[in-house]
Amino acid sequence: MRKIQKILVHELVSQEIQNYIQEKELQEGDKLPSVEEMTQMFGVGRSSLREALRYLEAVDIVRVENGKGIFVRDVDTFRFSGKVKVERERNFLLNTLEVRKALEGQAVVLASKRITEKQIKEVESCLKEYRILKEQNKDTSRVDLAFHRHIIKAADNPVLETVMDAISGLYEKFFNDPLGDKQLFDETYPFHITMFDAIASHDTERAVEEFNKMMNCIESKIRTFQL
Image (cartoon, rainbow, N blue to C red; front, side, top):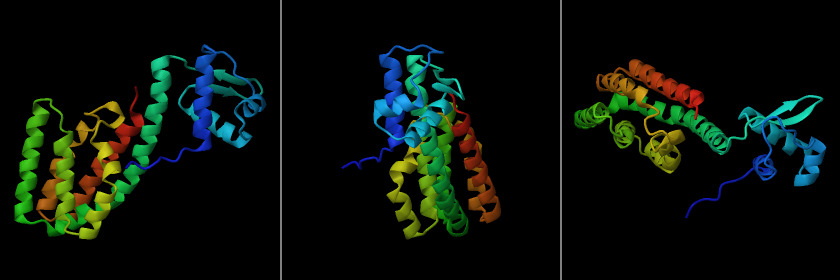
């Protein structure tokens, strides 16, 4: 059974404003009703409405000019709906990445101290498959996820592994078509190799350094992604 996601008031209001723009067939530069008028239209408080407007302004859907009013900035249908979706997923991934850095970062520390020869061979096999798929320009998301699961397993901490399993749905979002692009994080491939080399040689400091490079690369790709 899927959990019901919590929806904040300003998210509902932002959607209603978008619906209003589409229903009224407003064009770029057209003026929206005032804050006072929209609080009455949608039956919400000024704070929720202003938060919704800040969000819509951040994703280039409206433009707020002090003393003049609120204006439509972008009404292209595809970009209109797409920008909102991307912005929500971007924020989700960035928030989840903060948790991933903490948990998986600790797994890297432990793995660098506890990885076995058998596990080293398993990761080597995984990286070999990763390289072949990448060279053939095929989807690497499955083997990428498998690589990280090997590292978590090598940490040999059942509690940490259980916690990671508990957030697997959030974690796997990085590998399952993030922001609609299966190859978004292909640039992290070299860090898989350097991080593993450090783990295999039990060099904790270098393993963490390479892990952080990978996470910084992912964060940069998320923040700069455009439709």
